[in-house]
Image 1 (spheres, rainbow, N blue to C red):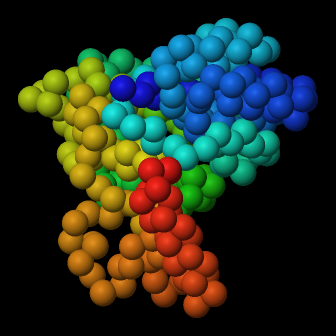
Image 2: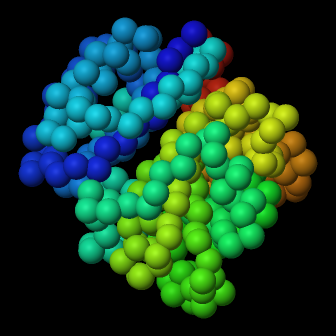
Length: 296
């Protein structure tokens, strides 16, 4: 089995570029693949590989400034869900586009998965899904509000347009692994919201810890790797990935006329050019040849 580690930490890196090379080298040396993002505000990403390799990479990250208490969630898979290792420099490790938002200064109150059901069932609580619309479409908590955003950077504008709806309410927020809520709750606190809560460890921790019989989760949780989606107990879901737009598809979506394996789906068919589609087709041919030769 392959170990998967989803991790993040908001901390101050004076020179994230200087951290990139050593981190990439130890990951590659340890047989680890995935994506890690480095920015002045910290580190974020998901990696997969042998248990010892994952441990080696995590020890290295935990030795970085402010990362001793790294937030890590583990899962397992039968095969590597990534094809290569990437360490990228970014302006933000999760892009909101609001320079004043600082999760190291203040965040909402963490709520353990075991306490989440009771909180969101309270009549004075409004529950907001901070993820993108295509993620919400795959699954969400019963009764949660979907802001219908295409990117996390749209969330502040959505809040400005809708905040009057939630006057006098306590606000509970959730996302896949918790990182987006670190910023979203800090933003709401800066906007004067008095009581803000967020699901500790995100949906992934909830699905891992809360029995399905007691769950308020409906559907599957989209994840940003080759597993595509997971369900209760973090068991692999049955969604597929459109290689054109990187969005999840169910079985019915793959029977639509716009779907072409590795190229397009109904969401992106009209938005990509013939040149892009030709490039995607060539990429798909190369992937199929590699699979036939026993390579990823």
